[in-house]
Image (cartoon, rainbow, N blue to C red; front, side):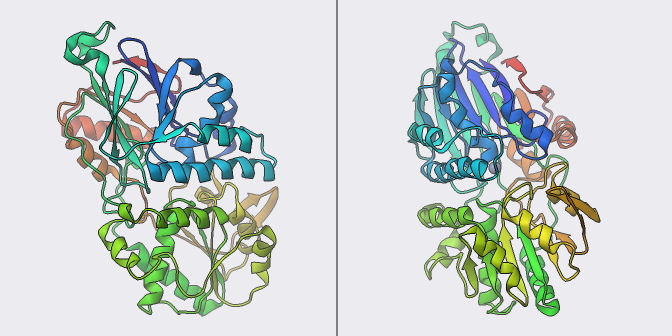
Amino acid sequence: MKIKFLGAAGTVTGSSYALTSSSGKSILIDLGMFQGHAKIEELNYAPYDYDCTRFIGAVLTHAHLDHCGRLPILLPKGFRKQIFMTPATRDLTELSLLDSAKVAIQDSMKILYDKQLAQKTIDRFKTVNYGDETPIGDFAVRFRDAGHILGSAILEIEDMSTRGGSAVGGSAGSGIRKIVFSGDLGNFPEDLVFQTEFIDKADAVVMESTYGDRLHSEEDPSEVIKEEINAVEKSGGTLLIPAFALERTQEVLHKIMHLKKTGKIRGQTPIFLDSPMAESATEIYLDYPKLFNDHLRQDFKSGSPFVFPGLENIKRRNESYAIRHIKGPKVIIAGSGMMTGGRIVGHAAYYLSNSSTRLLIVGYQGEETLGRELMEGKKEVVIDGVNIQVKASVNTTLGMSSHADQGQLMDWLGHIQNVKKVFLTHGEDGPRKALSEIISKEIGIKDITLPVLNEEVAL
Ligand SMILES: [Zn+2]
């Protein structure tokens, strides 16, 4: 087998791999957008370094844009095959792709694809359930629950052309037949979905390393949200929560639901969900209660676990601006999660210079993003070319992260028997170096590669 790293090699975004069997047939694994600061996003427009007519199929781990967001570029490059994913991933990816085509046009960004092309791509989606073995050319692919977001998968991929040792390619001697792609691994126990599945055995593992250098704090994010909301209730200010539309928003809503239900915050505090995309995603969540963990399923018995008194869904942009005229304490949850675009940016420009404002960071912030600058305590930021003095209080809780931390990554990898090679992707260089060191020291795997973009490795 051969693997080519077509994204997320030295960065946390842009996931994409081409895996080629011993008999020379290739499948695509993920084709995500590069997200973050301008220089990283430029990579979306760089030529895709692979002949897409060679793919005999594609598989998608999950619906986050950094895994699926470039799929529509496949068709103009001659791809005519199917794209496999779980049913929940299909629904969420359809939403993500159509939204990202729309957002690109609204923000007059350089357009990667339009709605028609997104739709044509969606027409190639084919669903498979967790646990089923799906043959794609020479490969047998199995989706396992990654416990990261609804529908997310780890991929177990076996090269059938080497089964029984009768391979024609040059790599049969290496003994690498089964490779596992972690996709993004969950932070177990997760708030909404089931725990990440462990994999018994693999010859090679391609593993994410987003939080490869740190452990999540033990603080309870519900407590932090409670204190933040209580603080604005006292001051009459506004609490801004930038949140990704998939999973993070639902987690925040679910926690606020419990805080309101148990009287830990006032029942009537208005909470604006200023993200039509997140609202649509929440509806998709409600279509898949079978994927909810036991706690959430219990909540679901008495209605939507994401709805509570005082919640208002904002749809149109003019309604979004109108929130500013509403006096008194309030909470605004809006995307994007790293404040690189979306409605949160307008709110940030308006509210950050006010000392009664609070900003709560609840997720990963990429290097050089507005969210990262604020998280690191910058007192002056530039938004849409305007200098803004930051007088708001900024707080961070990463306990809600939907990514495994170093300990969890180690635990997951340590469960896999027989691993000869590890590739660390989907992490900045610091975290993946740190993870590499601890893997070789504690698990004893010595063959660990930190691939660079467009590197191809024979397995
Ligand atoms: Zn993800």
